[in-house]
Image 1: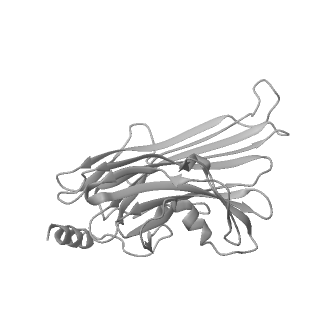
Image 2: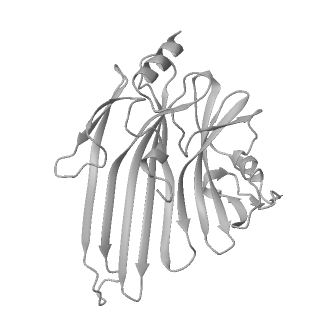
Image 3: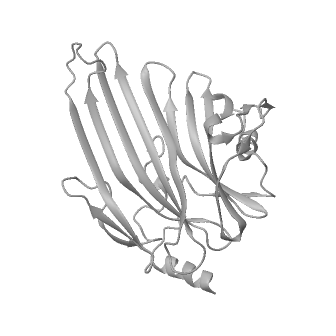
Length: 274
């Protein structure tokens, strides 16, 4: 009854139920030991990627390579479990390096929520690394926490995500860097997890020379946007507060979880191409 009341309240509050790129996809059956290998083994062959590789930094104890035909080769990985919450629900994240036929890779980070007889997975961020020049991106999960943010029921999942990019040119002695930090909240009530909201807390953009003391026509600049945030567990709301002296990264205000302007990371344009 409590679960149904909470879901009804979230729906009435205007929770965005439309599809997003980071919707969690249901995978039937008991979770395999290695979620990444199970995922990439099912990826269809195509002309864009030569192979898919589970990121060694996101799995334990090693990495595994799966080619475009779905053939698993090498490694003996086991997905690292970030935390376990009430009811035996487990949470994990892992990375996949999708190596391109043209060179470089499109790297994706996935979130997985494991129930007793099924698991749910979603791509929550990606980074394109072309493999030439001083150009690159990195998407990472900085923290995964369980917090009681909505009255009643199991705790909610709070993710702290980061994306960093750089683009440099030695010939012009120029460098551009940018970084973003974001908070995403996932509800674990009911039969399936669902996104309750996402918001950016900071954005930093910088330009300047790559090499100090060398000639450069690049203008040295730095800009930063940010908001502070505070969860109110008594009401199930989050308050986004404009930080003094900064332009806000997200619209300030007080929002019900489930009724934020952005429902999930993809809705923020946080994924590659957004």
